[in-house]
Length: 409
Image 1 (spheres, rainbow, N blue to C red):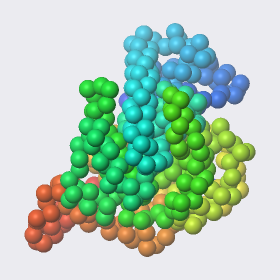
Image 2 (cartoon, rainbow, N blue to C red; image 1 turned 120 degrees about the vertical axis):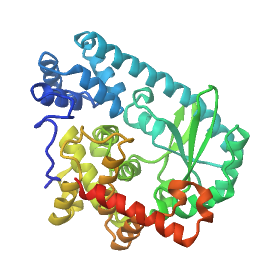
Image 3 (cartoon, rainbow, N blue to C red; image 1 turned 90 degrees about the horizontal axis):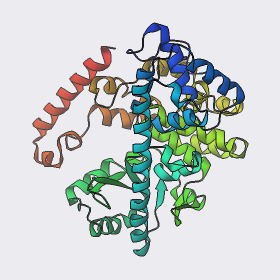
Image 4 (cartoon, one colour; image 1 turned 90 degrees about the vertical axis):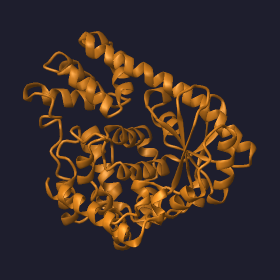
């Protein structure tokens, strides 16, 4: 009852891997993308390492899917680092060290931001990133994160922006804020803390744009838990709500990137029987994301062996027709996903964002926004002065390009 995809363990993986070593390389990468290994998985890894693995491609795929930290961790745990040829070994080692350094710096940056917000009476929920890595992997230096995501009450948004400005972040223009309040769910603020490297802090007031996915944020906050970042208390979602948010984030990224599936699979593996699956299923149904949850759970189970209870898949399973349609859009090989700068490949996956919603009204709203978006989203706030005919021309050209791209698959 899965999504009827052809998985990498049974086929060749990304195009750069030759037919001989493709399946072994894909299988090994997927086995190295988990924090707990069974004895059978350990034996299989040791056997694969001795076989025809394309280590150059494995190192590149680990970077592309942002799982280098996990790969290096498991190779070291199993004392297999030296079994990797020199150049890919160095690439994996350097990548893992960079992730560890970046995340330690980000932890200190996060403490500064959180303390300043708390002093201003703003109590954010830390989304994904360090909060998730600490919960799921037990070590936030294993999982890369490029920004700090914080959820605040909508009424606190203006004050939160002022706090970030006091820390040296650019103050967003009113037109920019108004546009994102109407069309988005977060403001991406840029600045520098501790280092000369730019830092992005996303200040969220919701978890989905335009009210597409109705969630009870008061309930999410009541269910949240306290954890510590370098001894500083912070707030994050409960494991159940973290899993729901991960499914929503997979939709945003159109299931591109193994890291997001790893997060879901490892959360399920770590908490397993402790998860309140009845709450998770009921929440997905009330929010209209049962299909989305099913896709995330089905793929994490099939690809990464996460222990999803069969009854949960039964309760969230969409119709056969919808599963067939989804299977034609999702890549047959989840390791051969397009890179973010592959605009055509990214566009071909656009309908996933529509089809993974349950409520017809939400599907129509998302379809209309994807096909006829406001020009400000692509061309900048300055386009607000465009005439009606200019806007129609922009949308017609964009629709034509998107239609050609999606039909050319």
